[in-house]
Amino acid sequence: MRAITYTTTGGPDVLTLTGDRPVPEPGTGEVRVAVHVSGVNPTDWKQRQSGSVSGTQVPGQDGAGVIDAVGPGVPAERVGERVWLWEAAYQRADGTAQEFTVLPSRQASPLPGHASFDLGASLGIPFLTAHRALTVADGGPQRLAPGALSGRTVLVAGGAGAVGNAAIQLARWAGATVVTTVSSPEKAALAAAAGAHHVVDYRAQDAETEIRGIAPDGVHLVVEVAPAANAALDVAVTAPDAVVAFYADDAATVAVPVRPSMSGNLRWQGVMVYRVPTAAKDHAVAAVTAALADDALRVGEGAGLPLHHFPLDGTGAAHAAVESGKVGKVLVTVAS
Image: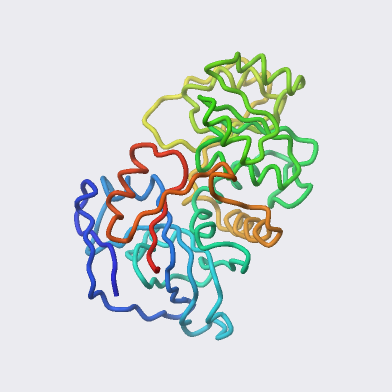
């Protein structure tokens, strides 16, 4: 089978297309998936660039396809099931940038017939991150569902990004009032298309004034991509007992305004999707699968998340596009 592999860290040029990789067999509790689309996330190129490699690695955490074989302990009825995949390459050698991949059954979640493989491959890391960020507040829901965030106002920083888009869609599905910040009119249009009720261009507007005008009592949750840049704003616009859930993976140091954070009982909560507790991860997967069943999740320009397709032999270019900050979702087409 065809697969993208690398055996040493480095730039996109370390990714190699091989056409004779053996088709893997599923073990106990595993499924084999014929991959149609592989999703590319920032962690994919970061792992390739500076992570540890032992042997041969196939990149790709997220993807979508069809189960074509199951191992012992997995119901035979799963063969033929359309699925979306998550964390395929986390602490494993076989990701989704190949024609067939094997992974634990729980990491292949049902993808309904009305949902495209492009949508399925866009879920994984962004949507599981967003779900965790939206469910870490004290007294809040552990699992999102329609009405779970009713009466709450959520601020999503960077509503045109992949996680920002996911947070907007999930928060709106769960009944929240969604406010988002962006840096340009073009990104404002994308955030609005995703479903945000209010969009604030912080380069053209006074963000604190605009957000306080929308939510005079403050926002209850902040899904934060740039905590170092936005700490002062977050403190200024949050309600008492709010949570700032930040997921950015950068080298910046956050200067937390101590007294305002204390007086508001504001909690700063880091989110690293790979290390989310198992129960919380299960809640996230179940919620995303339910939202899919409700036909509440979308991708594409009309959903605020433009898609950028690359062929399997263009995986290096796909990694480079994500690293350069391409707006939208980068996908690798594995099966035509």
